[in-house]
Length: 91
Image (cartoon, rainbow, N blue to C red; front, top):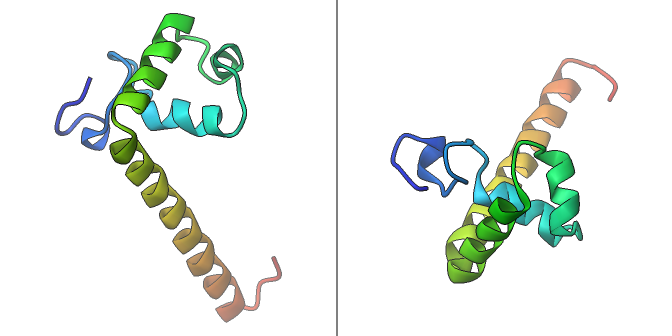
């Protein structure tokens, strides 16, 4: 499912609010589909496979989302380190 205003317009699994890129993140990290269910126990194995199928049909879209998420995390960590340094707080 992909709708503007729902999970940032990113592809999701049905009405679960689980984004396809979340499933792909764990898959690329080495998790088998069955192991991904441990992170999202409300999903079914069929839905995990459907998310992976969406990824393989739309790799550029999902890879761009993953890269943007990674950039966001890096930027957040940089701002956090700068803030802590400015305030003399040890990490």
